[in-house]
Length: 120
Image 1: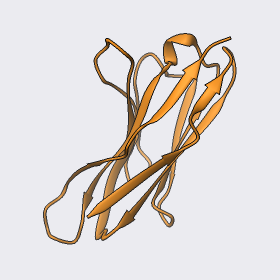
Image 2: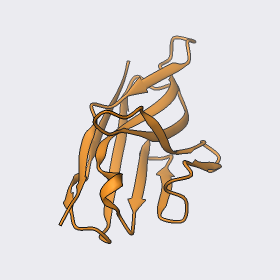
Image 3: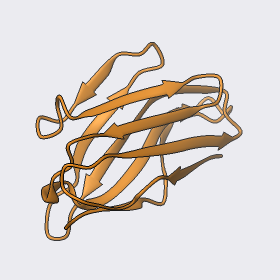
């Protein structure tokens, strides 16, 4: 199986920055898209950003020009640099990946989530 471990969440003031990291480990034959979703209390989960193994990126409309996603394919790690943070960015951020864990069955795996709170 594939395990995802996130780090980097916390409390930050409006206008500040945070960098999230997510490392994929375990039995990984091939790692495809990696990315982040977020969910705030009482709201639907929304895509924050995703990145393909080739580096193609997709961003949610609310974070474009403020957040940057990147990945290290050697270390199976995805990063989310979040700048100009707003209170409405407060949410649990969950990392995901589409991977083939060497059983020929590509599927999605999730991390446990990390809290990001933007408040003064």
